[in-house]
Length: 99
Length: 155
Image (cartoon, each protein chain N blue to C red):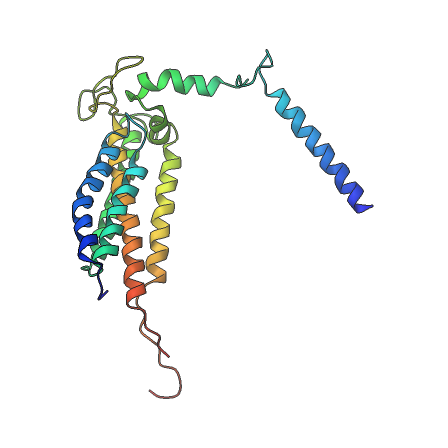
């Protein structure tokens, strides 16, 4: 019984996702013509005049989404801090009653 | 480490380290024109450090150099981002684009051959991130090599 319910739920979710993807296609129904292109067109058309840089990807990485790059750099910094913390030299602690 | 690889490997390393570093610097400086950028160029430069560590084995204590290099890169990156607030509107505002200063050239609209002296703050941030990534990955490699060498089992 549980397996039947699980299969039914999976089918419903699958149909829902399929309908959602079909909704994303363009008016002609053509593949490769997405609907929501306002942001893409903005970046592609205006990044040269905004940033005076040819590479749109770099313009997005370092100007429009600069905070994301800052987060990546911070992740790297904390990774290095973790490595330095794990591999630091530790003096062995004397255990036992001796002083 | 008290071992090193054979003379063949060391000679090839001597020959190959300089082109690798030059290629990394090229990737960083041309980040606003061609695919690549600070992260990729920094990783390429760090690979030269890995080559040196693997082939030569013995090395000096570079921990403070790499560490200060990394901190300098990240600090200058954040300072450049904050200058956007002071000089322009928001954080990461491109205040250097088209002003005629360093990297301040203008780009003709559409397809063009690509000019290095353009991009405003983007090449500067690429250089800072490249500095940081190169130093960070080199520091991780160096610390791991050193730790695996000086590992001693203590009771």
